[in-house]
Length: 340
Image 1: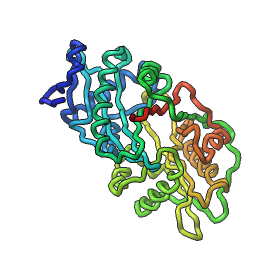
Image 2: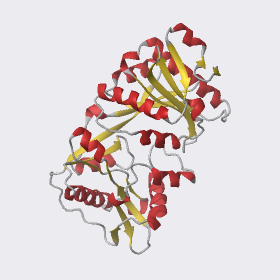
Image 3: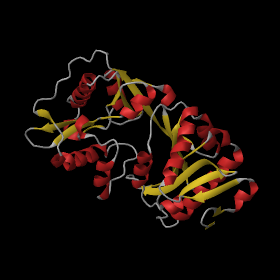
Image 4: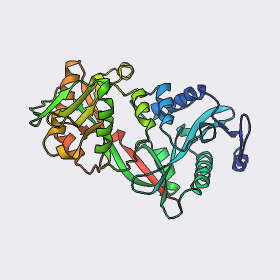
C-alpha cells in the first residue's frame, strides 16, 4: 500500500472501477468531510449542527494518529463520497480499542465500496496492533445512529455486534420541576479560570466509573479548554464549603447556530458528574435543576442530554425522574468486533 501525492495504491480498488482513495491533504479537507457528513446527516434526519472547527477539534483528541496516513477520503469518479479515519487507544480496563470513524453517503453503502473502505481500515489497524502486547484483548470499535440502518446493518454483516446503547433525551422547559435543594454544606460558584483545573480533575475522577473510560494525558487539559463546548458561563459547579473541593457539576452549553438552523431554543445540560463521596445525596438533581432554571431564564424551550443506557450510577433513571424522555430515533449504538 503506497501513498502517492493524490491517491493510495491499494490492490482491491482495481475491482471497483471509478473508486479511489486519497490521503488527507490540508485543512481544507475538514470542509470536504463536513460536506459529506452534512449530506448524510440530512438523509438520516440528524438534527445536530457541526462546524469545521468541530471536525478539527475531534482529531486533536485522537492518540496514535497521523492525519496524513490515517484520514482517508473515498472518491467515486472524482466525487468525494466518504471519508474514514482510524487510530488506537488503551482502555482503562487493560484492553486496546481500535477505532474506526467516518461517513459514507448512504447510496454508496453497496457491498463493494463499503467493504473496500472497511477492509483497508481494518488492515491498517491490524498492522498497528502488532506493536501492542500480545496478551491483551484488542477490539475494533465504531459507532453510528441506530436510525442509520445502512451503516449499522453493514457493520453487523461484517461481524460487528452492538455493545452499548446511548440515548439522547429531551425535556420540555415548561414541565414542572419541583424543588431540588443542594445538600447541606454545598454551594454553587461561578466558574472562574483559576477553577478550571480543579473542575477538570473532579470530572475525570467522577468519570472513572463510566464504561470505556480512558485516563487523559496532560495535554488534554489545554485541548479541553479549546473545545466549542467549553462554555463556563453555563456551568453549575458545586463546591463543598468545608473541604473546598469540587463535589459535582453540570457543564452545560448552548449552540445558537443550531437553534437558528432547526428553529428551536435548546440548552444542553451535559457533562453531569458527581464524585463518589457526594453521591446519593440529591446533588445531581439539584445541579440539573439549577441548569434547567438557567436555560429557562434564557428563554430556551427545551433542555437536552446524552446518557449511556447502562450507566452504572443509575443516570438514566435519574434523568427520567427529572422529566427527560428518550428520543428513540436518535439512539447511538457502539459496535465492536474482537480482533482475532
